Length: 336
Image 1 (tube, rainbow, N blue to C red):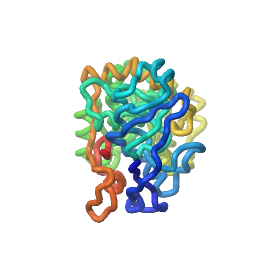
Image 2: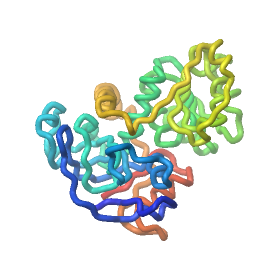
Image 3: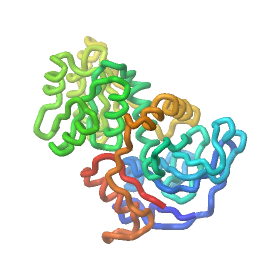
Image 4: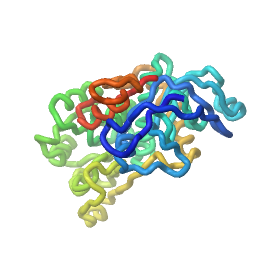
């Protein structure tokens, strides 16, 4: 099979085309002929040596794919209502940067009606992550207010749309006025340019001094102390990345007095059964929102996976270079 490999840890140029033996689906698994693979921030961290591959996962990067089922565990597929020839998108623990990919049947979902494979490849990682953290851990309810740090990231554009579809109010932060407008166009009720405006003061103003109920944070570091101030009583801070640093200092007394919850999670190392439960929730609740048009994939750029261009050895390398500029709105995808 054709793959994109990490030649050595470093800059995007270390992502080079390669060849590996075709994988074989085992018990509870199926094999996908991949049409498109989504690019995610953990892929960048893996490429730079800052995100170790979980035990048992492929060293090939890539956490989400879409394509056609070519073989698999017949009993598991039948139980999931899937057959050879079906178009699916899947969350995987690695191996997504390849034209063949093995995935647990329980982590596969049918491509939503009306979507291309390229669009479908942009869904699994962010949709699984947002559901698990905003709705399961954060317990966001209709009528509550969600603050999203980084509203134009892949996670951000998903969280805005899912929260609005669920009946919540959304405040998103972004690093430019143009990105703030993009957040509003996706349905956010308010957008804050964090480079020119104090997001804590503005979040308090927008909620009449009450604060927000849930914060989805991809920064951590010194943001945590400020986010604690921005939460309403019984508020929930959910940390899913530490781009601002792994250490934080905050007012623990405020956490106690206002009954705040600080939590977080990573998705990749969780067991198949955990991810299977999320997949079922997505299929029952979120897939109808996609098929009705309430939620739309947001794709910034698409690259041909193995084609060299722009002085870089592969489309995947170009995709990583773009992601590192932080200038994209939504997802970046490579095709096979």
